[in-house]
Image (cartoon, rainbow, N blue to C red):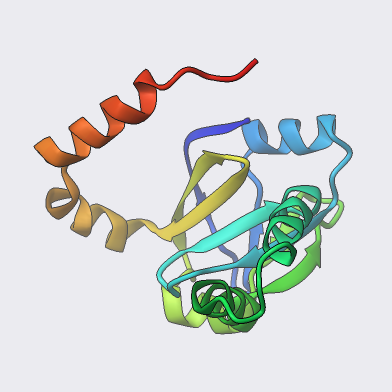
Length: 151
């Protein structure tokens, strides 16, 4: 499970070296293929290919007429590319997404349980004060956390 924030840099060729903590997790699962995409163009999502394939299987069960699914697929296809990690643990971020999300230098790499999320660090830090948890957020989270987990 991916968790935490690991600052990193994107090199001049658009490659991101996976932070060591995350690299250990993908190595343990023998993952070298990833699907890198976005749903909003403000950050990159790096999905280990097996996890992305699970997401695709979930979506395949929905109707082609479902507008939300079609929007999701359009966005993730537009920004997305399947990539292979090189011998130095680097992945090439898609050019369209790199430009749109300004993933061209210092970035923050967040673990989001099943995938990694990459943000331009400066832009993310500028937006932090406006993204504090509200009372409504806390109530919604409490409701989610109080549900019984099926074993």
